[in-house]
Image 1 (cartoon, rainbow, N blue to C red):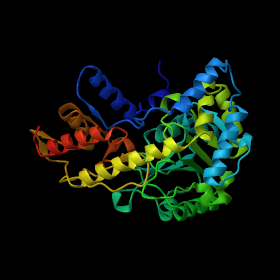
Image 2 (tube, rainbow, N blue to C red; image 1 turned 180 degrees about the vertical axis):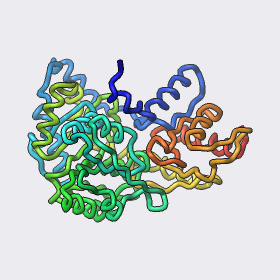
Image 3 (cartoon, rainbow, N blue to C red; image 1 turned 90 degrees about the vertical axis):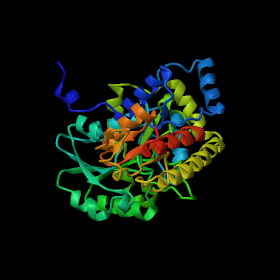
Length: 396
């Protein structure tokens, strides 16, 4: 009864782990949830007030499929202000989350057997979205030894006559690694030379640290603007994950095809959320900076603590709110009578025995690592790392 298409993909492992952790918590288990990619901050009041005003003023009907002109203009102004790039309204589509925008892209550009280059570690949904579009994911593996970054040589080796696109996620989920301007320019030029579309996932753009200056790939290489689709949204920067507003900016023919697809699936994003997103983009940005500073403080603490634990090595990421420590030295060892042979077994052990939820690196195409989200309070971070350290010293 089930289609081969549905059988070909896996459920999101990050959401599965978060669901399990939350279920245990509801049962009264003291779980420290390092699994979910969601800010623990509340949505700013001015944004919530804009949504309430939209409801009270009756802005509760259908909107144009790709978004209202008001939110398109807010996105255009944001891209000009923050990224020094210029777009027209017909080059913008608003969807029900950045994830939805990505899904629309793959459905719009991929024909059967088209290849999409995906650097690993990768966000868990990229692979399955490409498969759902009947494309073929081509994974470029990286490690912490090369700072989880792809190089021009690695890209050139992955390119074939069937290569349609490449995904760049900077700052990265799960590693937090962020590409600088020169690195992005080099990638864009290779793509231009080989007529490859660029899908640039920039959802964590606002969350960068140590005075690192975020650069959009279109800023780095303006010539690639027409062959690049930018993906962004309000979920991470404004603590609006549940509002479900993401957007894409790029070639108007691709955006038009995405709009056509969206018209036959979800139609417009929530009208109320659209009004909230307009306020997020146009209103004060002070809250974003407050949140960013707090994430930076947590990152500094968690990286220092992890690197002090024997058997764990963790690079210091420039962005997002994840660390991706290497735990390969732990594998094969026994803890409380249980031999840990893989990052999956380690994650299970931590959840079942230590009451910490993390995501195994295998979910991101990188065995021997775990992803820890520090999008939780500093008290939870401290408590969770204490538990991890005690577990590895067999104190539990």
